[in-house]
Image 1 (cartoon, helix red, strand yellow):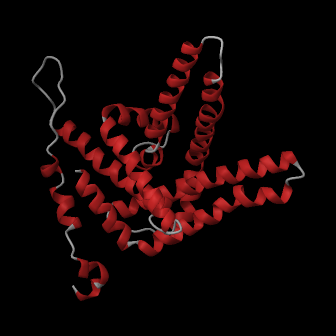
Image 2 (image 1 turned 45 degrees about the vertical axis):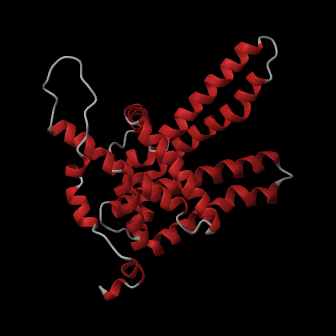
Image 3 (image 1 turned 60 degrees about the vertical axis):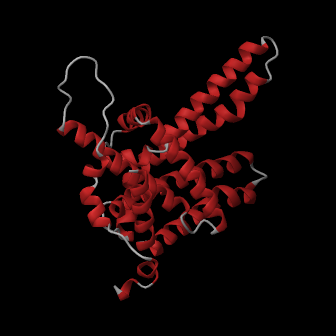
Length: 264
């Protein structure tokens, strides 16, 4: 399943490369607001921090709109920029909430963990508390990476989206950890390509593809309930059978197909 996921994501990214680049350019332009604009009002502290906060929240709203739009790509479709503009309003609540949660996680890493590490009253207890906060933060980060795809595919009620992020993590911990490190690799690769590709849009596309395919597992489990009785056991998921239709629709390509698709 992992191999097919990476393959399909790459195919979809390549087929929609111009739109991916344009979405990434929009994010880079959005990021300029919290990074560069505050320098224009450094002499007014309240305005300085207000610009940073509003600019950062706008970046999360933009990512939410991008995630809603890219869902069409992983569903073998396409999106227009008219759809993107409409998705800004639809995705705004999710973007604002994830922005707030990210700020809380930032405080955990920048303030709470150093506080416990530097607490000298009971060193061992302090280190244990710091470790607890660190692993709590790690679980939250890995779980919340699927916040936008879950909002796009499962639920619009944000409290349920938040809850389902952790349900997905604890039911698929290995898959979620792999996705996290996979996205770190994409982020490093994006640095060398000026974040034009794969960039944030490529990462959001991968996450939506991942969530879409992972949900096929739950469709299969629902269609094939375990009637053996007794204590439930973790069942082997027949991914080869589940992905037959997707493999046929995705197909395979040669290097020539990628570079000269019109010669097929």
